[in-house]
Length: 611
Image (cartoon, rainbow, N blue to C red; front, side):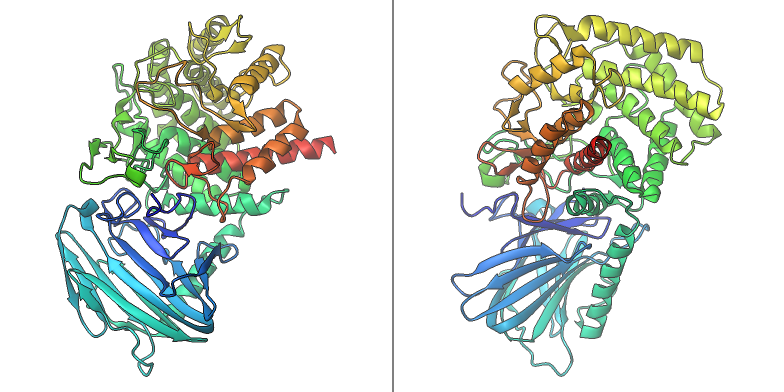
């Protein structure tokens, strides 16, 4: 299946409302418009023949390629080297701001930096996941791809007196041209949705302004980082990646900008991650505030408050929060299969939407309230209405925490009494009590204390498996689960407790393979899906955090350094890592980069204390 690039052979660019993936050979093979969860315009990542792409690569038969980000930015440079010369493609998206807009620009600038180089350029969009036909209209200044509901305009970048080097050739409703450049020459394209006029020639000064403004934005944003620890490069690249996955109009963070990338090649574990999980986004508050990005954390807390307000006082087993939402806060995420797409390396089905949205996952309440409590400690305080609405959430949880659910891994094999869900329900009551005490707010303190203590006693009695010498995935079982690595992080148990040391040792023997960590063993605990999966990158970083808290700093540092070796050439991670070392699952994954930041901060602090 060499026609598909490796998942890790991509860089990410974006404008804070949508994003695109660019391969190391200069192909944009994933781009949804006008926002992250919109239908794709370029989707060759999931079907090479039917998905659509925009490719700029050397015409030379053999070439070497390198890819990097301009330092401290989200501007991607793909470099090509041949015996005749060297060239590069500079890709970025000018930041759109916080106002929802259908207008998005993808800038692709082509340069020859040494000798000479001829580039082949193909522009072949496939609108609505390839389900809608389109027409192309070519002018002297560019072209327009027109489909029902969306137009993509191609502007050319050149000076009026420059030699005209771009001559579009139609192939059906796609465009192709060759571009021959000498050292010092540059030309470019700007692909724009919802343009306010026909194609036009963009002068170099205007391009340079877009370029400079984009550099200025990213460097100004990153300058707010307070992280100065040992792994600054990896941590700050993770921060930029998280920012690229943030929908600026609402402050919501998508789990990943992609859909349908397989957790196992040829398997069915192919999910749409272009939505905002309460859990993932709540974790973002710790990472963002840990680095000093207060405004981003404040925006998410406001978004979370809106979700709580929408269903404040909701009754019944479904609960006052869904586990995930669209970036605008809507909750209709109906799951469907794109039957006409073969999937990445024929890993069908390709799913869009997410049927797990209505699952009952009780842990989200602990994660949400813990993030509110953590934000309060950093000067982000809930108002009166926000507090009273949070009380309604706790009232519901007090009535419903003692029931089975699907668990944070969104298993589809039936509900269980998951230990992690219970622990996070304990967190919800514990943090609410602390918050009420710290802020002098009215609270049902007696009931919250009673429920918190009941959960603690239940977990110690039923979540602990004496024969395994470990806390286990769910009551009555003996399966280990790496989600429980967070027990000391949230303060449910101290890192020095013998029960925790025994649990950590058991996980190391069963879930850890050469420092990489599995979520759980699906053969021992069937999750309703066929096949297996790789190690979970999030869990490996959680393992680092747990080791550091347990005082095993040398081991934690070695695991972290090994894990950095599995990053791609740009420092990006997908969801999972296969036994072969290649990346699997949706890419890049926000949860993984959040956990990287948390692990680095925790381990830095532990090493500093030791020294």
